[in-house]
Image 1: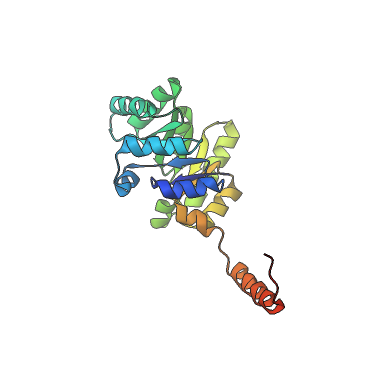
Image 2: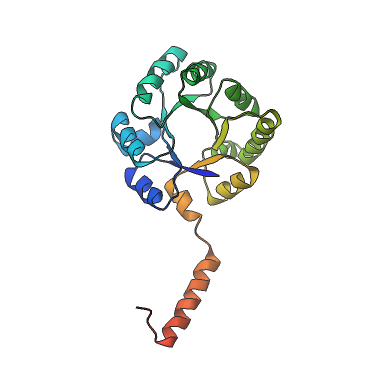
Length: 217
């Protein structure tokens, strides 16, 4: 499973990228606002930093507006994936931009039916939002399972990009289901390394090592 980092914070992306933990980056208007930077400037810096797809989101709600904004965003770098919402106009924009040779990430997916439409429209990525479904007492992971089954049944090439990841458990469950990509905030990716038994074991090793009075260096 590929890891995308869901942030517009350059330092966090750089740290994870140096560890080989970054296969791409996703941004959205909320993350751009949080970074406090110009969208084109920060997106260009991210694209220069990572080799994989960098999702940059359109904000117009009409198909024509999304297409125009998408083409402008695509000028930033060759690894831009244009992000459009899963609305009817968004599907029209997806089809047009895909036919022009651009990567398209269709976001805000909350049902298997929506995911089928995105695949038919030629989406490069479909972004089902796990956490937001969990927030309203629906099973976000079940949606990933449904989409995986449907896409495998018919050979759709659209990649499942699990989004709205809230926990390390979400990451491992998405991997078991067979999501192609999971995009998560930097802190969630870091927390995947945490386990209390690891901490306890390390503490014991260090205490025993101290008793030997030895030094490796």
